[in-house]
Image (cartoon, rainbow, N blue to C red; front, side):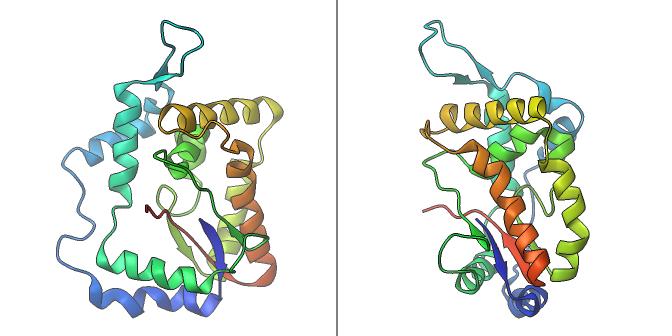
Length: 209
């Protein structure tokens, strides 16, 4: 989800929950840095999916896709502090989807991973925060917005490729054949533009239920 929250809350939430941070929070698996370097230096262009022997069958994830899925899960692993901040953020967001809130829902497949895979390493690197998670003040939103627009306002050819990659992820890594790949590109940008216009803060994160 990507949503608007009051600017003051965006600036003060971390201090409010810093007491919940425990030793070891934020530690990554031993191979995390290696996988990050691999992704950033061409790994995003390796084959993530294979076609089955039966052309009508679904795409098959390769070990490369599984590696990236695990990497995204590890990048924003929940802790007591982050979960408390996410709970608080959800009470501050608009109650219904619209200009100030976008929620992508799916079974099994992670939309944040799909967006990163769809955009590729270079474009997803200019997206704010850390692989789908961010907490930004109004000033930080205004600073980040031009780069987000650069990443998400795509040419026709680029957009077609990104949509194809997102769709492949959401169908092969989960069971969401009707997932709206276009909204995963367009809606976060709309929310951030709304946030910039209204002087709000913004947050984004994933929740599993």
